[in-house]
Amino acid sequence: MLHRFIYFMVITAVMVSNGLYATYPPIPIQHEYHHTIVPLCTSFPLVGDQSVIGRQLLSGVENYLKEFRHFTTEADDGQRHLIIRHIKNNKETDDAGLDSLKSMLPLSPLVLGLLDTDTFFSLIPSLRHKQLCLLFPVEGNQELRTLKLENVIYFRPSYEKELEALIHYAVTIKHKTAIAVLYEASLWGKSLLVSLEKILARSNIKPIIAAPYAQGTVEIEHALTAITQTGPNALIFLAQPRPAYNFISNALNTNLNNCLFLGLSNLGVIQNLLKTSRGLDIAVTSVVPQASTSQLPIAQEYRRAMHSFLTSHDDSPFYFESFITLALLDKSLTTLGNNLSIPSLIHALESLHNENFKGLHLNFDPSDRSLSSAVWINPGLHHEWIAYSH
Image (cartoon, rainbow, N blue to C red):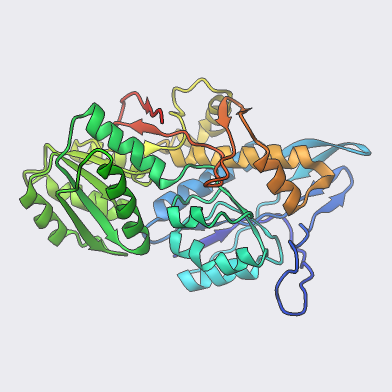
């Protein structure tokens, strides 16, 4: 897995003798004439299972930085500009990428984004030792949420809330109850399956089959055969984009061609491709509103900033989500000004209660440390999205 890191300057933070921070490290801010420089790093996979999502998240960050390179904060000497300097560092393997992220924590203890459950778990010791503050990771694992680490703030709701919306759509709106599941045989996939079965049990429904596929592969043949034999009318994918696409493509030649296909927000990246290449829709969740039609101020800002970029790229909720989280960090840094520290940043984000952030409703939930609980159902290409009410 290839990782990129975004940070704004290089300053080594002081560590205590045992190699761990006694408290949160200071954010190595520099002040130049009328300028403030705040360091930040972020990691996105550019190859592997989640590379499509990683590239889209990175593009969302880069386009925000390009459009809003300067913003002003009140300072003692008048208007001070925060300048974002975008520097990238590439690694070619999972271990090298993770080691590089850890090695860069002295350069900046602020980490924006992060995509990949296994990488997140590997960072838990660093989080417990208060070596970093993890902002808005693209992760909804319930086990990670229940840790309630104070230095992790999520924007998006948990996978359980996405699954609740998906089941409501399948069972209540589409009246599908013969539900099969394709899941990745990994910590991520098995955790999702447990949550899904718990949610289905509330409606007295059990999956008619839950078939695994091997992590890191697109080998879905055995799962396809097993699921086809059960004759479901709905199929939920707890899978990565490539194996999900491979499964649906092969399902065209089986009795699953009239099945309702459903997936979490990570499968939004294959929705257009499936429709244009196979003529099939997959209904997926989204944790952001429909950017192309929403009249929220944040959506209008996004469309203006991404106008030239999207002329040659399909739009994606991940572009929008990345744009939103960086805008939220922008606002937080602006509000804190010269009082910026990890504790003050955490407090500022935890203090967002019934906040109208450019049209988005944000309300910090201490139970899962998320700022948003909103979920939409995207039924397919060129369909109007459906807001899920909890």
